[in-house]
Image 1 (cartoon, rainbow, N blue to C red):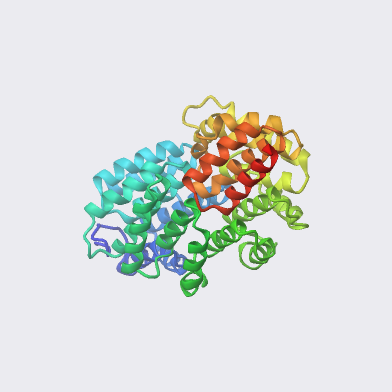
Image 2: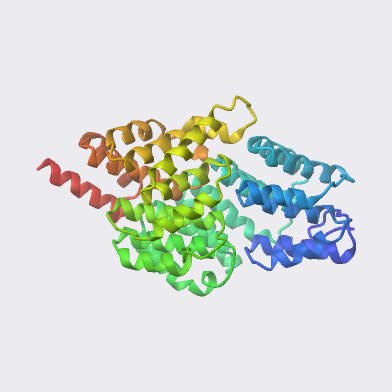
Length: 438
């Protein structure tokens, strides 16, 4: 039968309808997607329901949940070309060939441009790969290909806005995000894109005002609640409100409780590391965070996650633990398999970024600069967003300041202010340099 997106889908009518509900909820970032998915996946004939479950496991960015999601998919035999294409994507992704999975998604979306499962998976994978161009271009193609009356169409504008922001086109990103929010006020991904555009321009007060005004939209339970709180905290960092930032961390980002998602630990580590760079003591939060990362050591599965684990171990002062992880990352980088996407990311920039943080934690600021400076323009390769990767850019600047490399620090500060003229944090670093030169 045809699903709500007009695509032929195997399964009994109840399961196919539940799958459509799950997909629609995913585009809106609503947690009820999981209940609908359970209904769809319980039908042995609804192969795409089980495949969507596998995709969600892979989207966790962790090896364990990804493997579990694929295992729950079972021994599916594709009944048509679309199912076969999805299976090919899932198997490549699960095998560590993330770039290959991305190329397979290109082919899938060329054949079925209106496939919402493929587009959703592709958007997340492009984010994990740091592929700004595909983050922008896939939703742009969908906006041309989808029927404007299709469920979820309004959310494509928010996806496109995020891609525009990651490509550095901040005015266009802001305009697209605002259009998306006009069409779908509950679109937290469009709000997320708008927040990123404001962050990257250093417009912290505008960002805080936006999130204050829209608290009813982002403060309830949805898949982006923690990350939105993280962005709210970043705006507070710009204005030096460390106590409020720590309170927000404990209340919404991570309270130290059990079984947090990897993405929660990423937000916690990135936020606490920025506070550390500003000389703020986060106390026992570091120990809890380091312990949690140690529990989920996955053997260098995804550089972006491992880099945040290095931040956590260094922030806790557990340098032996950090060194051991960096050594495992070096071993993974030596993998000669051209399909091993994580190895490529580590060789290109991830390993240098990890070593730069470790050197910083050891007080060797010259070595920190030596590791970080050569890869400062290549960091997108290990995934995440500009805002998230700014933790390493800030580390480089602070290392240059602490290491007495005033000339290079000046270059970095002026680059930041050219992009973020209103950034209070960057202005404060310029003031430090001005004081040193007097």
